[in-house]
Amino acid sequence: MKMKNFAHRLTSGIACAALIFGLTLPANAAAPAEAVRVGSYKGNSLDVGERSGLIIGPSGTEYTVTSSDPDTVAVEQIMGFWVAVAKSEGTVEITASNSAGERGTLTLTVGSAVPASAESTGQPENLDVRQELIQLINQTRKDNGAAELPVSEALMNAAQRKLFLHIRKRRL
Image (cartoon, rainbow, N blue to C red; front, side):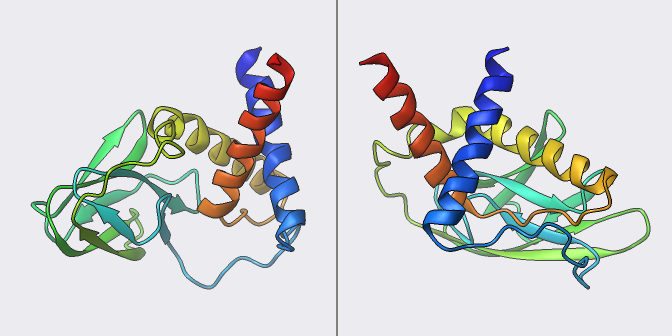
C-alpha cells in the first residue's frame, strides 16, 4: 500500500515539475528513430565511486550491456536493472544491444569524487523504486499504444523533492 502511495505521489510530482518548468510530457508521440536508447539517471558525468542506474529502451526487451573500459566504469545488473559503477577517472562508451543486433550507446565521463550533498544522499536507496516506476509507466503506455516517456533526471529530482516536502509538511 505504501509503495502505491509513493508511486502515485512521485508521478504527481513529476507532472507538477513538468508544469512548473514548462516541459511537456508526450501523450502519443511517434516512436524515435533510434533502435535502442541508453541514458543514465545521473546524466553523462559521474564521480569516482558513484553509481547510476541506466535507462535502456524500449522496455520489455532483454539487453546485453558492456563498457568499453570496465576499469573506468563497470556495468552490473541488479534485480533486472543495469547500473553503471564509476571506478576511476576517464571516458567510456556504454553499449546496450538486443538479440536483433540493434545497439545504442552512452558516453560517460568520470571525474574525481566530490563530497555528496545532503540533497543527493537519499537517491541511491530509492533508485530501484524510480526504475520500477518508470518501467511500469512505460509498459502501461506501450500496452495502450503510446510512446515511452523520456526520462529526465531533473524532473525526477524535482518530483522527489516535492514529495519529501509534502511528507515533511504533513508530519508537522
